[in-house]
Image (cartoon, rainbow, N blue to C red; front, side):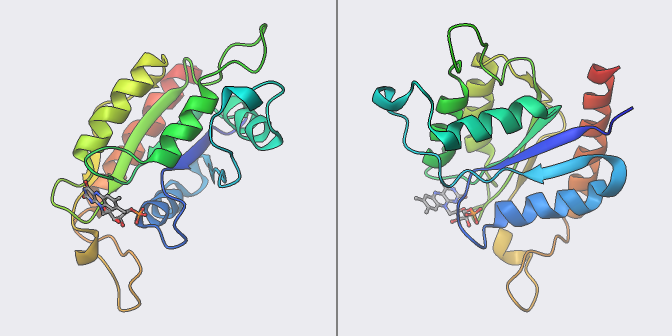
Length: 187
Ligand SMILES: Cc1cc2nc3c(=O)[nH]c(=O)nc-3n(C[C@H](O)[C@H](O)[C@H](O)COP(=O)(O)O)c2cc1C
């Protein structure tokens, strides 16, 4: 039996993104229980129906990555109580069929959301908005446990890198729950 393939989509293009670091922490916690890859999508253009067909190469590549994965793990920052524009742009591309005969690639995929931010709400509001969008696109979302991590700046090491402290048990709990959630859908 092939190993579960999880694709991580991080809603920040920032080099030292806390959300990207959170994704890498999740990868470490998952270890050899599943494949876990972070999607690179900085080259995806702004959605513009003038360039939708044939799809740009970058769009073809990210659609294929989603198609080949068993599940998607979203890591979203919170911008003004919403998820980020780059993430919305990517999802808008993914929400469209590649051609008249192909379905969009997100429908039916198991999904989960985590996020880390500076403020005390820890991306809760961004996550609520993202759940609404992903539900509209028919993703199979695991809603419990959710993982909003507040006050990233209080969980850093001497070099300013994310070092999960109080949040670690909650991250581990979400990892176990999502691996179980995905496994049940693959059986
Ligand atoms: C335009 C903008 C809006 C922001 N709005 C929020 C917000 O609503 N809530 C919050 O907790 N942090 C907010 N922040 C701060 C982010 O939490 C912080 O920049 C965080 O590091 C972004 O995630 P990243 O490290 O993964 O890039 C905002 C940052 C920017 C640039």
